[in-house]
Amino acid sequence: MAKKKTSARPKKAVVRKKKVATKKVAVKKAKTVAKSKPKAVAKKKGAAKSKAVAKKRVVTRSAAPEVIGAGQTPRVITRGGAAAVQTKSGFPFNAEQIPNGVKEAAFLHSYRKSAWNQFEKLPLPSTNDEAWRRTDIRQLKRGSLQIVDGLAKAARDKLPSIPARLLKPLVGKGHGGQIVFGPGKTSVQLSKAIAKQGVVFTDFATAAAKHPELLKKVLGKVVKPDEGKFAAMAGALAGRGVLLYVPKGVQVDEPLHSLLWGPGAGLAYFSHVLVWVEDGASVTYVHESASPTIGEQSMHAGIVELHVGSRANLRFVELQSWGEHMWNFTHERARVKKDGNLDWIFGALGSHLTKNFSEINLEGEGSVGRMSGFYFTDGNQHLDHDTQQNHLAPHTSSDLLFKGALEEQSRSVWQGMIYVAPGAQRTDGYQANRNLVLSKQARADSIPGLEIQADDVRCTHGATVGKIDPDEYFYLLSRGIPPVEARRLIVKGFFDPIMERIPFEGVRQRFQQAIVQKMK
Image 1 (cartoon, one colour):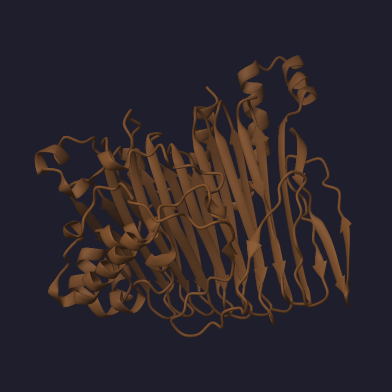
Image 2: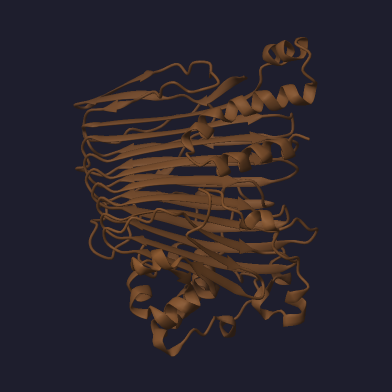
């Protein structure tokens, strides 16, 4: 197992009147399976600030916290730092490339036009922005990108087809429904039994024509296009979109699956995933983005909006297996209502560079959100995950664990924040990021954070960066295990706690395959 070097230790904070006392809790040497998680308790109105050994988290807060109301999307934490200077973005896109839609859904074109206006106004992110300080996108060849829909049909038809393995079920024995987005066409399938329950699982074009009122109800309610340059770009140009709507009280037993296949060089892909689970409903949904690796840059920008109603249950598996030429940018948020439950699983296996914003807003009393992340980088890959767990109501619970391994010259960045709003008493929040660095050139940055404005909570964070324990490695070699297999066994043991959190055998097998491929 890996010997860990702690970059940010869990902290136990007890806040009393006009006095803050902190007590450090030692991080024990990790075992193959994590048995328990440390906790920190805060007992007074005020902010509990996280400290790291080599990193310092900067948080800028508005003067008055937002009050959540119908149709509002709270942005509780704002990353600090100097604002980027407005310059010409360098992207060759124009307003004429906005998908037209249909007359039954004029609101959709209006939404896209408004997003385009935001795209033109918003600055391109730079390392002057706190959220982007560790991710530099200046090497993205923006001027050479072409929207895939602008290619001639003959050129699209020549692009590599979808491998059969990506169409196989990862969850369960079969799909209740499947949507596949290729460069030239979209296919949609949904079982008759699920459709009879009133479930809508279709692409944006079909939703705009057949379910315009439903699409209007949910579009842009969780993620706003003005949240960033790439969010606005995706909002304006995403012709490829998924609408999943589960009516009140409906239990969908068979998992649903969608795949965005993005082959080709110098191409730009855009996607928009909308999931709306009404009160008391339940569904499992797997979404994957994938492409083969080629030599020339391509780009993807996407939005994911998740709504989990009262007493509803959503299990959402999100896999990113882009080719290692792809620059990937996503803005994702989940909103969970009273007694709702969200189990959100991330798998990041590909791309050259990824910048992902993912956030859970626990808006209803008793709501629960869990985030489990797996990533493995090699070559010169750069993965940056920015996570937030916002506790906006009493008696809410969040649990985040991200684990990653790094080979060769790759780099990972994880920065996380637990926020507890005023009045969100009896909150239980946990976040941890564990990294295993497998080469001298690889680098992992891990920056956890807490901000607490309630006085009866339990919140904990922790981060570790370590290397393979030479004693463990020598022990395996002494038992006749070949060097490559010995390293692989240690890495598999490191990831075991994440595997235990994933209830889907197919997803676990995909992650195990990634370990084998990365460690050849």
